[in-house]
Amino acid sequence: MKMRKIVVGVLFSMLAAGSLASSGNLTGKTAPDFALKSNSGENLRLSEYRGEVVMINFWATWCAPCRQEMPLLEDLFSRYERVGFTLLGVNIDDDPRRAMAMAQELGVTFPVLFDSTKDVSKLYEVNAMPVTVILDREGSVRHVHHGYKPGYEEKYLSEVRALLRE
Image 1: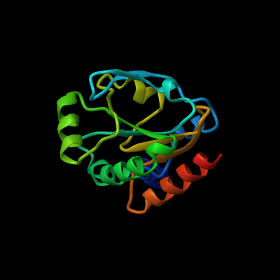
Image 2: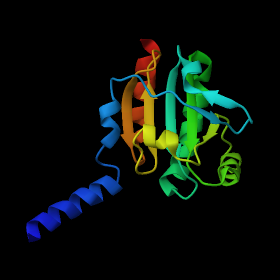
Image 3: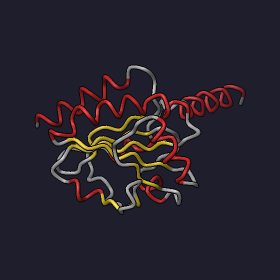
Image 4: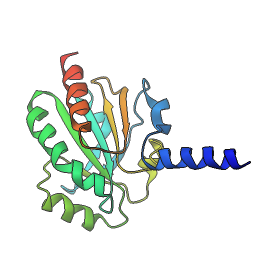
């Protein structure tokens, strides 16, 4: 019984740290379509980005790793936007004004979408922040990353470049 508690504790810690990927079962499948209001005031629909490599980054203002990776994602977006890459930042805060303020503070230019009802997050089985999903030009989920640690941006860069070359 004691060993079982330890194993459950370790698994819970790994999940909380983003080491276990529950949405890994989306890999290889067509990404669930969605439409959300964006920081530009428009509703944006994922399926409108078919033909581009798309990164969907689920984040929250209270998430320190999200804040840490946001400028790195902005750099990736600004470098590759002109060659068929887009990044959609899906914020899950209850109040979109906090998300808009943080995006402005960090100089984010990629579209920020508001999932205050958490419906899209549920579609993608997001249970920790941040979660980054990378789609190929056909809209298939190719990579899912849970959490963020320094160095992940190199993985993102490598995966995006490979998909842009396909």
